[in-house]
Length: 332
Image (cartoon, rainbow, N blue to C red; front, side, top):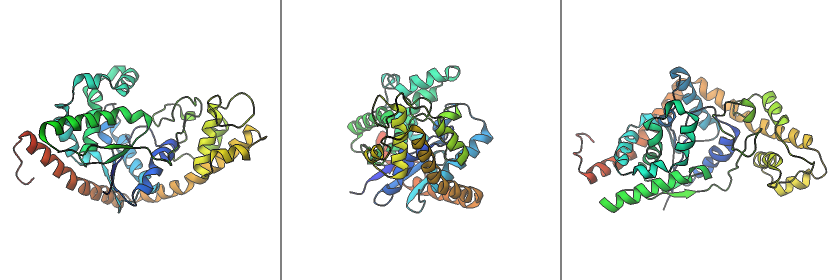
């Protein structure tokens, strides 16, 4: 059976090298043999207050970067979550099949609540249910996830099993997909943490639109470790992070890189990593500028993606509403 894949990114902060190497780049080969949905999940971003104009521009930037990174709108549905109202409708229904205790256990709610104490809203609390709706709406078979998303996918599976147990087979039960080609890129100044696109400290991240001199400066200043040996090991998180980046951008196994840099200093490695990252980002940035400059074409791609997504989302929502006894709307 052909796989159905869904993966989306919240338009907060700015897309980083970590987002590309760990997620977006792994989407591209999935398009060959799978039915793919790649939404920009903008509704998730409004749990934090946004400047309206900057938020709108950022959403367009993110979609343009999806495309510049190789996501093909002719093969995949590329769309904005809020343009498909079935997401919100299904999320409300699924809220009624989700237990408070389940949401109380969500680690990301606790972390984000601690970070935004002045605005711990109900949307933040119910965020995982909207995520479940995003997935279940398209009868997704597999969801590419990282370690920080496992809990949310487990909740999605629990909700789907609960609903199916009451009404029969309504939802496909999604399975996790761990992309083999993905790289876990860490914070440049604190390699114990993942590179975070919402990090307020620009020195911690490499943005996909960073200029070459900024990339070089950040990598030159990246935290390394005591000693001088270039090895990928737990006791050397800084060097291990640079080796991970080098391996992903050069497509060279880490073991080969360790041999290549045997007896060489950290500076040599940093120079080579910077060169590799700059070379990786150059075609993405060039493509982004071209795509972003043609607003008419970008709007057309977004509209087509939403239409394609709605054709499936509407079928699922009809099945759900009929299952629970809601009167079907005329024309749906």
